[in-house]
Length: 110
Image 1 (cartoon, rainbow, N blue to C red):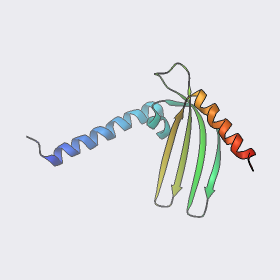
Image 2: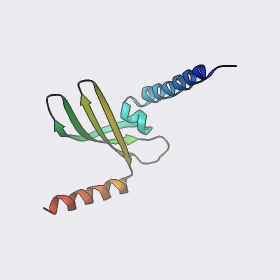
Image 3: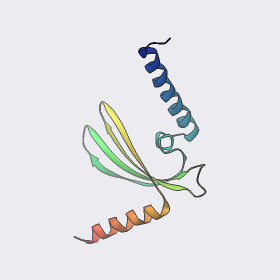
Image 4: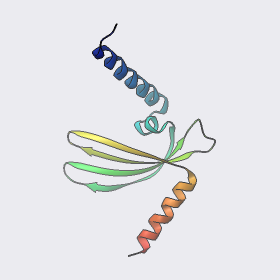
């Protein structure tokens, strides 16, 4: 019977294998995390930048095989000297419009 170390090793390798498969299928980290292929990058803006780190917000259109219409992907990518992180968000068309309206109202409020 396998011990706990072997079970944990198999579980970690399984998770890495699934992520690698999704990455190869999607062609990007954001696509792999959100379960689709990036069709188009609409734009990006730098939220923060310094000598040691930067944060970028990207808006992308994502083709998801389980849905008829594409979805909007927002990803916040933070890069630093010793690491990086990506926080992807998946929005429907209606949610994207709602977020756009809220941002517009916030920008007009001052």
